[in-house]
Length: 358
Image 1: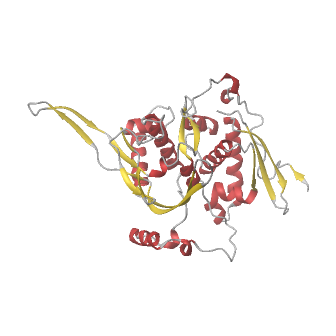
Image 2: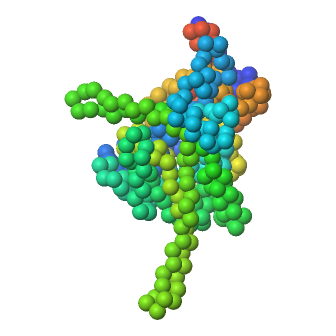
């Protein structure tokens, strides 16, 4: 089995000359021991199930024996799709988002952490938000749908990653949030709960619905003389249960300043989808302690840029992936990588991750 370093072949080793000292991770020994239930200071949890759905992709190399998506869906799911008016041929699995929409999700996950009780998983209020508790039917049971009340300024502040905010920024965030609230997604995944003494319970989830809802929220305070003394207009948002399902045991820790770090390392606030997907994929691998993460090169291309691969724009994918790799190296997530021949002779990427990255 021959080993090939990728140098000058489309996915090089960019970023080696960059100074990554600004993003160097603190040594593990310098960190105080944390309570197991407590999230380390300066970090927030993103649901592992949510991340998995956001990173889903379909191989662009289909086999004739592959079952069609339509044939694999439950009748009730097909009915929900038909009611939505969307052609079944246009439906794909997972949560497919633009870079701007992903930044909205990152911001909402942080706001959910900051504005929730996140120390006791046994309480109904765990990651439920800062508004009145919302209980809905989901997966055959009654469960909590997180609910948040915030101003658009607060959301825009997170979205911008600490940069100055203009009225146009607030307007853009509001438009992106509104557009996202109108989209429905096909979610298919398995929730596993382990029992004491061994054994487990597995629940198959399949649903086609929105991941955020935006009911109107306005609050006015009146004196006993019925005179308005204050008016508060906030955005009220109801998040899909996947934002908190099993978040006590299946989650990915994100630094509070992940948006800012990514923007600085990328060199622009207009971060590419390829960069965001590679970043999130490697952060998931770090969570699972896959410090030498392996993925076939074609699968990596599909994961970060499925649409471009279907359009046969592989050159564009390679160029964007070079920039993405440069970015995650500057961030300190990735130390190095190489390409080797897999057992079938197909090229495989090995990412060497920084196990002390925080």
